[in-house]
Length: 222
Ligand SMILES: C[S@@+](CC[C@H](N)C(=O)[O-])C[C@H]1O[C@@H](n2cnc3c(N)ncnc32)[C@H](O)[C@@H]1O
Image (cartoon, rainbow, N blue to C red; front, side):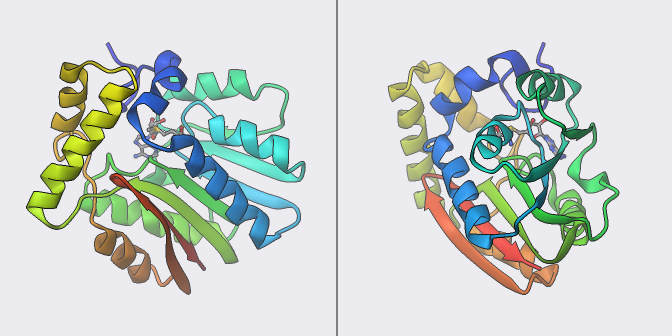
């Protein structure tokens, strides 16, 4: 039985995520570069859907002055993160992004492939919570699955993603099973829908900084 909402069990997550998502490590590099560029000094950083704490492990090596708050609705994922980050002073909260209680507290909020499990209304609620949690001038950095608007392109890109997974060790059946989750277990938005969601929250600046296969990176500055 799985112990979280992703298709990967918490203790296998780190091994398998790179076989599933193209350029996953690059998501972290891009995120850290953007935070560095913001030059906040002592960064208060909220990571939503932190999973096993991979982003934090890298960030803490690169920036000594971060105070992290990690949120995930899966106890098992949080356990993995706590074990990985045990020598650091970090606040943990077992919750989903649509129910976080923070107001004007953070310089950075990240959600790296954590919000595609939510349906439209819940995702809107979560994004409102993100906006509320940020300080003025703070930045929301989000990587998410995207779905092309055109049906033919959508089929083409899903096949291309399946091929990536097979080249990286999944069987054809496993790759097909992953595709079958799209629109059933996770609910990707189009690029425009992602932009609109952030516009609706009144982020002062919005920018799509990454797009590859069926994932995009977007940030919004409050
Ligand atoms: C694909 S993993 C990504 C984990 C991590 N961000 C990373 O980069 O490795 C998705 C994570 O989102 C969490 N998640 C699922 N539903 C969520 C929700 N409603 N709010 C916040 N996190 C959620 C899952 O428990 C899981 O840890």
